[in-house]
Length: 98
Image (cartoon, rainbow, N blue to C red; front, side, top):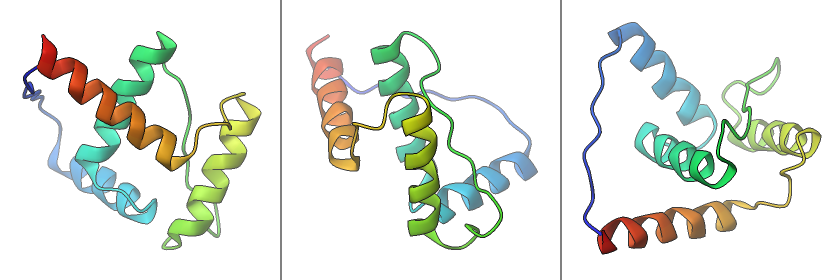
C-alpha cells in the first residue's frame, strides 16, 4: 500500500501544546498520530487515554509509567512500545498493499 497524507487544520497554539505533550511523552506528533490511527483501527474505537499528571511534566519515563497505569486500568496494558511499533509497521505494510 502507498502512504497517504492526512491534513487537517487546528489552531497554532493547540498544535504547539500537542507537540509539547508528545515531547514530554518521548514521542513526536506524527508518531503519536500514527499510533492513534493504528489503535483506533484495531479497537474499532478510541482505544486509550494518555495524560500527563502532576509530577510527570518533563519526565518521559514517568509519563510512560503513568500511561501504563492508565492502559492497565483500561485493559490494554499488554501492549509494549515494541508492540505498538509492530502495529504501526503492519499498518504501513497494509497501506502499501492497497
